[in-house]
Length: 474
Image: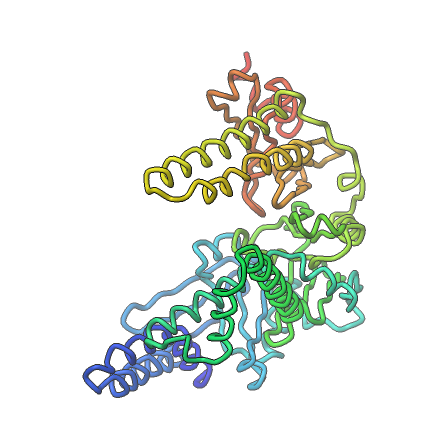
């Protein structure tokens, strides 16, 4: 821990340290101030070792940390939902790991409250089994393997959208670094050659080459990210009633989910991945990060792969296959009409606003016609969104599906529904439609059945929570 904490704090403060170094170049003291700041940051990280303590009692787990502001966090053991063990390269080199204990509220705002950093690997595994199983550390004989990632699934990596995010982050950081360092890119031979080629080549050729280069870069970045995140991916079921997910090439990660806290599963199909017959499986459970990206959170039960495999894993985890294969009820013509009205209407308004702005600015006519292409493209988007809408009540599960860029089929156990929220906008009221949201203390906290007739929404709510709406209906 004396090594890990200072290094981690220095990595977090790296942008500020680089900015301080560049800002002080004019006076010639940039390196000195940057060195002083680095020493202070490393010293603050070292203090965490001397001011952090934790203990596990028969009733709760307690964590105390802080020097100037002492803070003690405690959670009852029966509130522990999951245990996430992560080992970054420095952790792995030192035989240590980082443990995040999910209690249902510890992940809010991206700041886990119960985080134990710098535990030995064996101690982390023993703590995980004591918290989740109330028993000594598990052995290999206690686990049943549900999935081991085949190497051939890497072919799905270029069709994930994570590569685009990675590419934008890399490009933004590089541009920011070049700007702060006052470096002229034209001084580099390859970049100067590329710039001259783009200037001399026809416009259509520049567009084709830039699009092809962007697609290739995103595909390579997506593949690299897929390998780094899901290397040696394994999903196993422990005899004590937990699911274990292990993955990672450089950063190893192991997430344990208590099955009694599982409330369902979700099939996620991003547009490009859906085009090649792929999907991924996410867990709907309490105590795990949601909304920060499935790769960064702990909800991933199966990485991008064949849709049939995603359905199989979801069915094995939930214990029922019918909710993931049963046909869904369509939402009717009025819901379909709303998809087209919203998609085409918004695209036309955007194109008209862009045309007006560019006309006032005196920009050539042909340039804003490119923006007008979003209008015809909005028609297939509306058709896909209309085809995605659907819901069903299958046994003890509510099944809802929606989305186009990312189509999600969520299967939520009725026992996990703690309330319903019925909303109706002015336009929905004119069409006789409402949106019903089933709230749950798990996953995304709410799963919407969008644009359904009022009578159908009442039927769903009465099936999930009998008598809840009777006072409002009568």
